[in-house]
Image 1 (cartoon, rainbow, N blue to C red):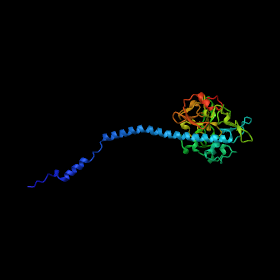
Image 2: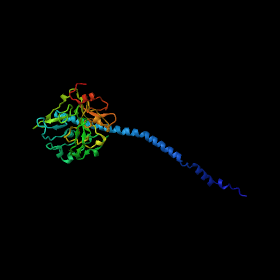
Image 3: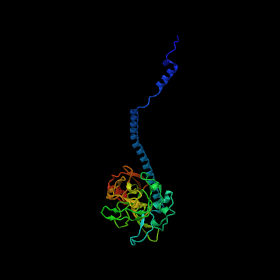
Length: 328
């Protein structure tokens, strides 16, 4: 009689059983859900850190660009023995005279390794060539707000405005062009309504001296009474989120028609803007401000770049904006 082992104990069956025992079990629905929850929690923990790291990188680039603009401006001052005017306006004796004016940003272009050769100094902004008006310069932009593909405002009628005094300011036709995020320090208060008065800062509206290439006031280093390290040169301009590339909130930076296209003020009544949703007590057109949380970047007249908190007192902000304030 044959004594063969049962089929279940054959070598083949034993190998199959061993292979089956080594095969991993499939995930259950519960296990899959737990894995998804864990991954979601980890992503939620990492996302703020990633977002913060990206914003820190953008803020660093913003400061570097603002410093480049500050150094270019100081080079202009060294060559001309004068800070560049924000714009040129008609002389007081002829307030209706036409003045073909480049803004200060056009004047510092050669010191940023850019060319301003195509700018025609005899023509007003609206008559300049389209490619000149639309010249986008990365050093004029904050990467938290935009890049070079979103830095030109189209031609069109600007929005109507209601001033804090209740006065209605009708919109006007604006010829399109490149915009900027950095504005010159025009002083501690806006020019009085209906005037073209110069400001108390370093980059201010100036009267054209007829028949010359000069202007007044001719602001020199000696006019900075309380020291270069205590006086603002330029900073981030407040622009609301829905105002990007839309005049008057963000008008063409080479258009000298309005000083707030490329300049800002700061002091009592005009505090720093705190983010893109702040209306800055109705004075957003005139205020400095940033989209970086907790700080607005400024370049001082000694070339230093520093963040200033939006909570700075109006009096201290005014002192930093004045070129002839008492020493701090």
